[in-house]
Length: 107
Image 1: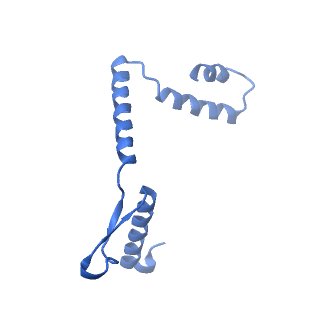
Image 2 (image 1 turned 90 degrees about the vertical axis):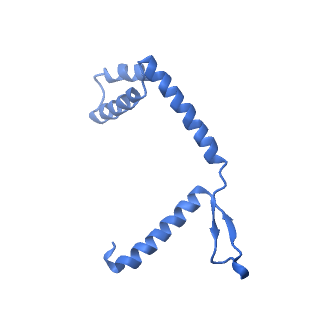
Image 3 (image 1 turned 30 degrees about the horizontal axis):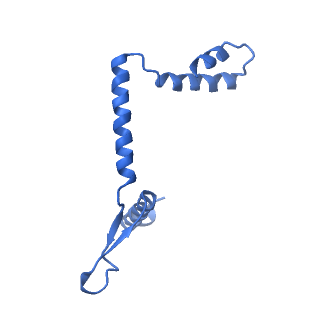
């Protein structure tokens, strides 16, 4: 991917905007080039570890214990949710807390 890009950057008929975009792509592609074999090996190990972590996260039972609507005798209810739903819920709770502490000062 990098070689065709480098050849294209040599063209004289590129607009300033095209050249700028291609230079950004060049810098991005160069970030992923690993010339040192030791660094390449380490990068491979990190990729494997990240894949295992992603697999573990995908099988996690995400949710929360709802103690407010648990009913009589303090019975609680497990509410399963996705990571996105939990994140949005946490953001809403934090916003309510922030507004309750600072009132109309928050913009």
